[in-house]
Image 1 (cartoon, one colour):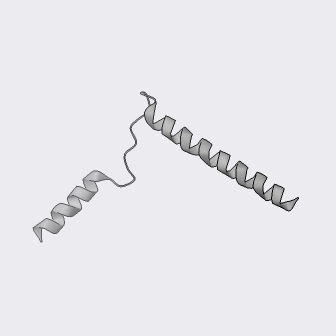
Image 2 (cartoon, one colour):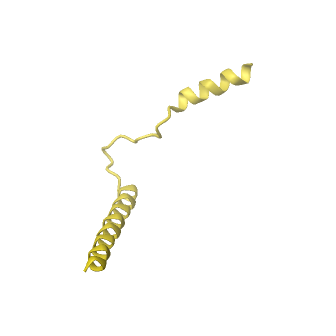
Image 3 (tube, helix red, strand yellow):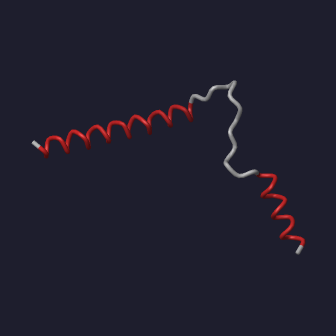
Length: 57
């Protein structure tokens, strides 16, 4: 009986993970055109300024 419970929980976890992956892929393809474009977590201008500062040294 416990083997059946473990198999059911693993199946549920796998199904939920699969749903999350598919949801993220669909979100990448069909973006909302009204939503602002989200850049990566770092600020590109700050990275560029830091690289210029290191280049001057």
